[in-house]
Length: 152
Image 1: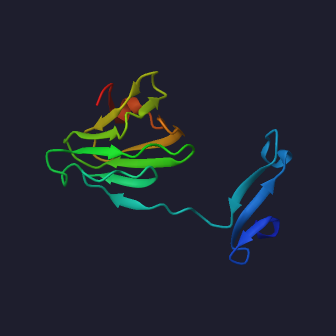
Image 2: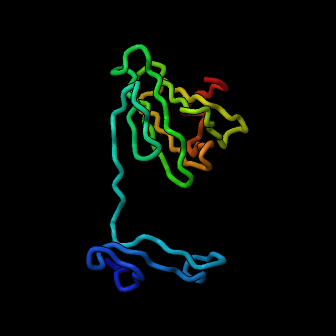
């Protein structure tokens, strides 16, 4: 591991830790800390079922074929700064991802704010990030992956 000598705070005998970078090293206006040591971060992957809230973090497979005719998944409220991946894994079956408490999705493709996302594309993957506790940012190009609905 190349960064172990530069860790300022470490865990597990310098196998993972924090490294403070100066403004010269990262180009920002103030120094910043980054996690170093691990080759990657492994997130939890789940195959979701309807009736159980979809977690606001990790990777979720939304498999409409196993959910029967419902195919509506309810997403927990966003956590600011935390990313979420969702895979619409149903073929030609409308699969819906809606917010739990009227939180909204904001897309970069337009200024539309929606409470429901849907897709019939097999393997369509969306990436979300919590912007506030009431607003998800849709990082995926929403026009090619999903359909947006203004209401639940």
